[in-house]
Length: 568
View 1 (cartoon, one colour):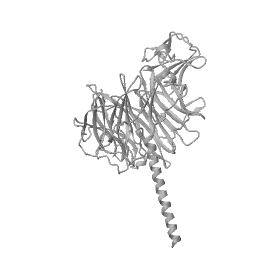
View 2 (cartoon, one colour):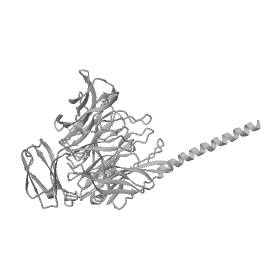
View 3 (cartoon, one colour):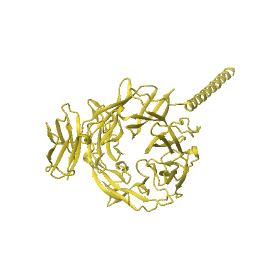
View 4 (cartoon, helix red, strand yellow):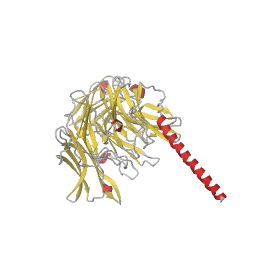
């Protein structure tokens, strides 16, 4: 009996020690997250003009989620530039066991030095009881000079006990004081009609045109003549922010499928292109030998300035990589600075993985087709758009070596399939586990702001945060019009433009020795080994109508001039 008692006592004491140890670990983890201060990103051979660490100054630690910090759960939704103010609209992830979008923060910074003017708080820390989503919202000024955002407000109160799978929302408009970031008004519908499940990037969103008229947009599907159709519905929103049903306008797109098998759906992607134009990517999947592959892909250009009108349909089927496989990444559909991009990573698990990239202007003309994103022998597996400046696309492609971790800054010209490396942005490999570019914005005075999402590991625990850095563009190799002799404004004039039979190529005296004319698919349709450039007439009567590019290079292959014209 004594032996049994001693054994039981030892087991009890061991259990107490185990419970105490677990409590210590939990307390230690909570202490780590409570005391966490992110490290700075120290870049090599480049110095920032300013940096800003995004922080929720209203943060209150919740016992329901020991992972959260005042810096975590950030995702930049929109960047707005207003005179000397830079506004960053971020999503906020809730402190619940199931996480999920809860609201937003708006950071108003001085463009010159990154100092904070004010932070607009919109989450549970300021008393919100419903989720709000502004993933498709612009920050814009109203006629009174104050800021407005339009998004969706959850119909149901925020529930911290259920798994987050999006939410049913009704339109909401917030007006924010330009001077101090306080709320001037909040207007949302009291309608509890469940319109559609909310998805980011497609599904249930709100759009606002240049006249400040909001509309509700949602993807649905319907059958017509036994064929499955994508259906994009556009619903008016009245002055009370209530969705007017039934929807007044809709766009139908045939999938050419005779089945309701949801695995064969290609869900349309919707993006804003200009203030009054949006683009929709439709895809058609047909069963092929037991698998599904994209057999047709189209981009619809939709004007919503006054009603809904399809202004153009562009078939991009032949622009995408074929055949599509099960290990290929999703097709990226992105708009930047009124330009449209399609990109995709092919066979991402393979050592031979590569990325293709297509670039279109706002009218649907193909500006460049990159079959494989690479520079020399370096083939990139990931990249981030920095933006379009002076008609040139700049991207940051992921580059890794033994001691550093960073990005090659690449320059891509319209009509030129050759990629130039113009800069490098890297940091030393330190305690920060990983980092990636989350956003970017070209600023006045030849500067660029780049946002970084970073993840730091401390004692095996992840801590993530958002940093915003401002650099001089020239330090990244991003040149300006006055610095870059490649820009046609300095070297080339093309007239008449458009033209049907001939063009006059006029340029300053340059080191150009080679002339090329290139079509929208990157094919050379005319070339000349030597060029007397000051005034040259070129016959274009035999060309097909469309957009063409002219490129001048010197003996070493460097581009010293470029231009474009339209053949009628």
